[in-house]
Image (cartoon, rainbow, N blue to C red; front, top):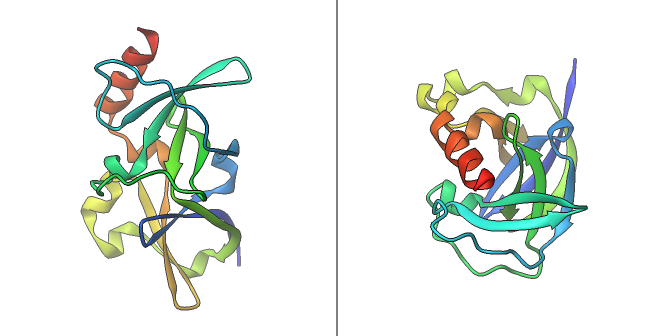
Length: 152
C-alpha cells in the first residue's frame, strides 16, 4: 500500500494538491513585475535568487474570477516541463499523505480531465482533493507562449 505525499492548497473553496516532489518551494507573496502584452494567465515575473520566474494566476487559468491577493496567498514554485514557474494560490493548507487506493483516477471521473492536468481525486475523510500534474495542466501552446514571452 503506497502513499502519495501531496501539498494541499486552496483556490476559492476548492482544494487542490501537487505531488510534493514537484514543489520546489512555497514563498510569501511579493512584488510582481508586470509584463506588457503577456498572456492573461501570466501575472508577471519575480526575481528569486537571481532567476526570473514567471508568475501564473492559477485562478485565471482555471476560469475562476480573479480576486484580490489575501494575507494567506502564496506562490508555489514548481515547473511545467522545462520551465520553472510560480503559481499564485489562495492558501496552502498542509502536506498530507494520501493512500494511493484512495485516489480515483481521471478516466473513472471524466475523459477530458486527463487533458487538464488532473491525475486524480484524493478522498481524505470527507474531503475531495483534486490532484494536479502541473506540467499537464498547461497545453503545449501555452508552454511555448510562456517560453517565448520569457525570452523577450
